[in-house]
Length: 281
Image (cartoon, rainbow, N blue to C red):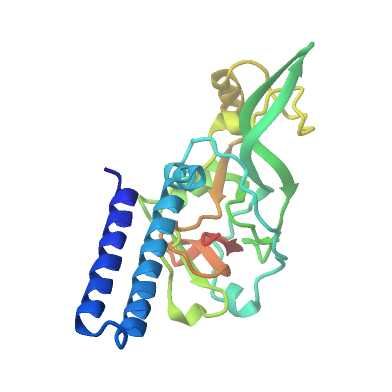
């Protein structure tokens, strides 16, 4: 017997028992009271049935099976559907608290990790890479503008030797505060401290791509990754990438966060920027 049928049987029993008790006590005087009780019980039954129907609907099943939408390192994700929020330069009361390392940031780019298409003759194929790229700017030597939308990715390059000299071992960590209340202290939005979200093959898109990126390579993911690594080594550069993260456990309102990649040993930050957290959507 299904849960729904069980509920209907219990509802019927409730109707009969209520009506019988009212008749035995007073065939007429208790009728109104009995009707009210029956209506209340019927409403509870209807509500329970509606909940069961919703839980069993295909859309609910899809929602349950969908799971977390947070991307993990080196794993391809689809570009999320979202509303863009106006992002400019973080306020001075935020940036003034960031002391930059002074290490030059170049090739500052903002985009997404997602699918792109490339063509070889008549054949069209899809790969995953760093797409929707747009240039970012650096102010005060390490503040990135504009800010990032939820789950956008920031990429930039630094001098490899100088950057490696800054880190004696797990010196860097993320620190994020709410832009409208930095005095409340750090939030727990950022819980992954790697400096490389993107894989090497994500940076070297296949030539003939629909993104219009000419600094490309051909072949497999592995061969394109090798081409990127060789180019970075030749130029003495190290590529750094961060995704504007959200916390799936958080279901509060959309808000701006200001974050810095902070070196605990030196008290300086490699980069700082503002971004929109929209995990509640």
